[in-house]
Length: 197
Image (cartoon, rainbow, N blue to C red; front, side, top):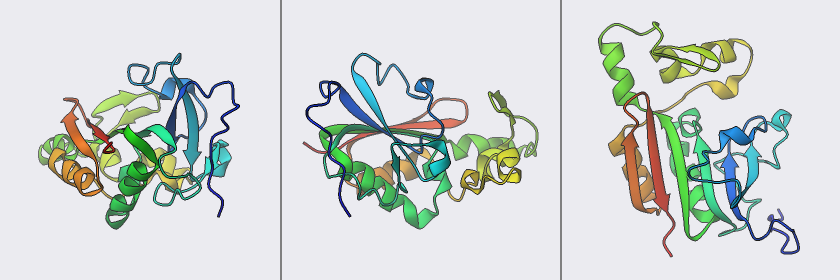
């Protein structure tokens, strides 16, 4: 399989490249501008679903189409929880592999400790918050957004989950340094790790 290399003649080559994994449909608002300001970054979109028209169709557990050290950052928003537990180390190792030395991965995903507090109170199906897609209940956070799954989008099912401690350990084992994982105080974990220089 050939690996993708970025064209040095490309006029945007002076911009840093963020690999947006599990990107879904194109939408510049999906990139957090505090981490990836539009005047300094270009987005390279990767998704397993060809219907969302990504730049690269691939699984996050096997991104061999990308050369080692080919991007400056990886952005992953609510992807790792869709993997089976044994696939998480593969995905994180791939994130680290495609980063240039000193590059970073930024990730967000459900905070299972926070969700567990609601479940322990018996609030499994009551809305925890309202998203752009509609009400989100703890059962949706644990197992995937029910309306999407019911509509035939099996990619939306959740197969694993994380706490601050478990995600930190996974990232460290995958080779990241300067790992930082924190809860946003609502229902998401945010994590950042660097590929060693």
